Length: 345
Ligand SMILES: [Zn+2]
Image (spheres, rainbow, N blue to C red):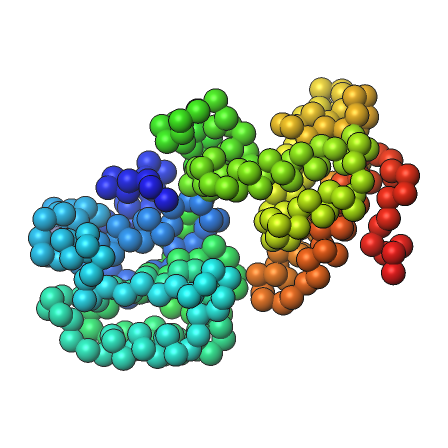
């Protein structure tokens, strides 16, 4: 992502304060768990922290000088005392071999005569044996090494690993902070609110939505959902049109559209109008989407994504068919001829 992280992100102030407090008390932890939802800039934070920890002439514990030999090597992505561990492919596990190599590396002397820094992300990608291997390193830290574990779902890490890390928690910033940052990075800032809403308020996730093909994917899912809610499309055809996006991606957007619709429902019902009119997703005029089905959709999306994230294979057509049928049902009527998966078997 072509975002400049030369400056700390504006919603990371509290976390940097914590880092400064560690440095000032001379107690920088051997392991830090950076935990929070995706899209909040945890990796950017961890890289900048690694940079600062390795800088040989830091002005402040959170600010690398940018000019020393160490900073120049970091800038070129070639620092001998810095290792970044990430799965070879997104969604694949981090295996024990990688952790064993890391342990061997940490046992060697630091090339620059200072500490070594390791960044593992996402830490929950470590399989059980990898996490166990890492635990040994956490129990017996080598020299001055610092391990930075970035995790979107820290509950998936063994408690023994979590308990040996100092935690830095990241949360979505207040809307105003997120929006003003996002607006500064968009060519068409008019959509900032919508992108933030679809990303649970996580600014970098919102930017990714705005920039990437994800936008195209979201448009396609939104289009299908709108047609289904209005009973203007056949669920089977819509499910087929979603095929190329992949079940995980469709589940992601459907969850957000569901959440968005529920929020809209809640605010409309407070206003005494039960009709659903979230951004781009609405049933026929005068009709209200079925709130129970909306929750069913969100649950289904979460369950499917959890299953997919755990590397368990799911029938993609079945997931897409089920989702399309659920949206048709949320639209308030079961379109003629709509074949729900359970009826086809
Ligand atoms: Zn430096």
